[in-house]
Image (tube, rainbow, N blue to C red; front, side, top):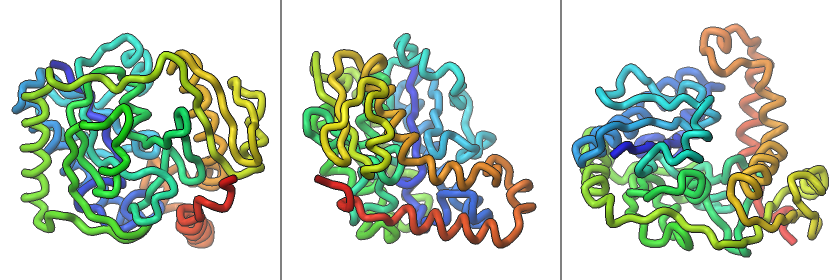
Length: 312
């Protein structure tokens, strides 16, 4: 059994500070990478123990900018080649997936750093909102063995993900407030490892996240950004802040619309960080203090924008 381990950082068990999830605060970022890697290694080890022959890790945090300390991965665990990953997903190169570090969707005001792809955008299929966990499961189209993450995600694992085994590893009460359920780091790792092993042993009982034969995808953005996407990728503006596209195929119809919405919502952030080169802490250290301070304030404020300012 070849398993794709889909990972994200905000739902990692021991990460409790917003500063730990972006390189804008290098010291915090280094601690965050280590804590995140704990969860990834624990999940991968559990999957191997449960019967996986190989685990491929897809670092989905910030586009995979070295969020995971790859040197700590055990044998038979490899980082995904992101240049070919989408093709592998479409070619069913994996037997199953497992998710770790997952978080609640945009608009969940009691969820730690809650967002869907990017702060500022929300998605729904046939008027049912969905999470990033849904998106990456639909992309893979193979059985989802289990999910470990923020407890605020649990009630949002509905529809196509109803009944998927879930392990809450942290408990959140606000966008910037969370705490580990198991405060001891080793106990947290053990819980994730044992959960992943159990899920792997029972993998034949799980099914792939299914989509309707035909469905309507809606994208919710701030009005100006929604208008900018009208008539692209089949999207039709149906309200001040809502676009829709009728779909029959995920990769052909839905995926381009989701990527367009994600890009539109994230443009201010990526334009702001483009000169900073977050792929290298050495280069980031050379950025002048004023620019770095501005970026930190921008990120903190941008993350906390209220979701309901553009709802119809």
